Length: 389
Image 1: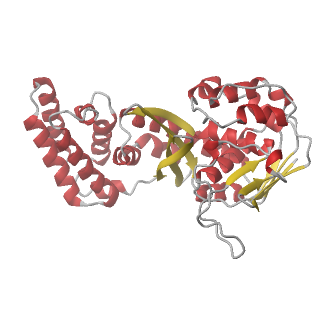
Image 2 (image 1 turned 45 degrees about the vertical axis):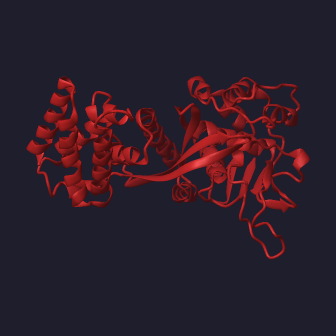
Image 3 (image 1 turned 45 degrees about the horizontal axis):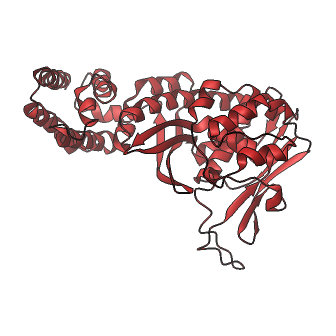
């Protein structure tokens, strides 16, 4: 069974999920497979069935992402395999049913060709026409606006893509393996996904090393747990980046795996009406040797101790800084936000003024605080930092 890859590796959500699914398939296939950037060859046609049968139930149930009103992938994907089955219109239930029926997903073709074929206002992937294909709103966040051609006036048109049932199974694996968490902000759900960057996808496919892909997924799994913890407390970009850069655990994991760096893209999506919209798309890179250490070593001889204390400050649920940032009405909220922006500038770009702003705003928060216990906590934090610099 051969999968021919003629699809661009880019930072679109569809491409990210597609290649996430392909890499997950390689990593978790029981049978041997040969692969490179152009094709993947599996020795066993049951590889998809085997992978779906072993998906983690808890991880599936977390994926409470609903389909839009006109989505019918919960029915059509089963029809394409000759099954009279319909799941609920929520992706956790769809993937649960796919797991239960996994023995029926036998691929009776010798090859799958993942390529872009334009037909009028449609994009066809591994199908000859849209009647053969499957589609869903979650896989068309970009809608392919901006495709240009000398023969076709598509720049301002939105195209819907239709893909084969086999490609649909791969995309759903990408959805399953990249989903982090859901948060509710002002009664609106937001969904977070973590995928490998295009750079990493190209590297992993080009090196043709299945064990390396497995190792990258292990690191990614740890990264997703860290992100889930961060996002559940505060989803600001600054806090996410600060915590990851200060995270000694992830750096040690890379170092122990003999990997210098690993890069991802974090997607934040929300459902608006009948379409999913990308709200944020954040590049994230973790290094085994953090350059921030060199910056902070200029102000402290106890670099690791200072990094640990800063990490605690922005990650621990007991931190008065973090609990203060979680409450917009908190008396010193604006000071803590300025402290966050200050340490962000210092950590990310090495701006020394950012460090001074950070310390000053911690003092200001301490002076505004009325609660004696929290006031004492702020004072202890400030004194501890002063001892370390």
